[in-house]
Length: 106
Image (cartoon, rainbow, N blue to C red):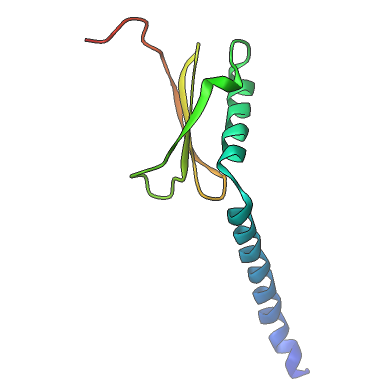
């Protein structure tokens, strides 16, 4: 058996790993905050249905939360939902809808 055939699986694995890392770097370099906000605002409108609008959503930085880049917060008639997003635009977790208080809480 030729010697290069023994190294072929290692070379293939290295090539696949390099392509994957390049892809992640490309995503991190080109994704913007606006892309993330628009994506999760659209998800919110699709999940909530009537009465929800893209303007119900805003974002804040994910300070103090390891691995979280942006938190998209959507407040509408159904309550408040938040989407915790990592640097690659992936959803880490989503808070359930919490009811909006109708009167001041004292």
